[in-house]
Length: 179
Image 1 (cartoon, helix red, strand yellow):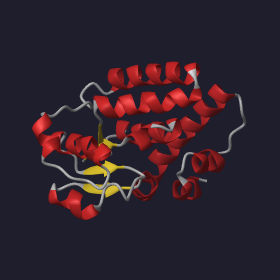
Image 2 (cartoon, one colour; image 1 turned 120 degrees about the vertical axis):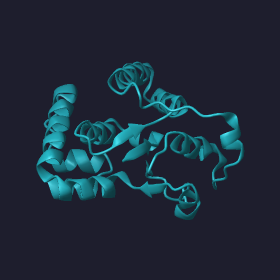
Image 3 (tube, one colour; image 1 turned 180 degrees about the horizontal axis):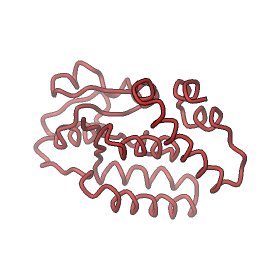
């Protein structure tokens, strides 16, 4: 299965790391576009210069680790598409160009299912999706979450607990399952 990751699931870091950790186990193939990565970089500017530097470094790691994930498309593709928020059309175009089965996003309103269905694409909330993956592969998802938890503790110097970390990352259903 191929899944286009919207900016809102690439940033925050914990959500991205868990999704990509699951992807490394072959559950799905992640996709994104240069514009999605650029939106992430712009969002990181709100954190100041350090946030920008961190986003740049993490984006470089994404390119290194997932060299086939970035998709491109001709401008004519976007011209034929419609979404309630025109600024999200590029996300749908990337999903189509990458032959994605679904878009992982927290923005339900901006990606109506009936419009996506016309293109043969579904939409999934990352929390619900990861909960389903957990039900099918509990040991693997727990292992991925543990690795992300350890890295969060290392980077922040804080004694994060699993449930609190996942809830902060907008993954409350996964938090309940894993914890």
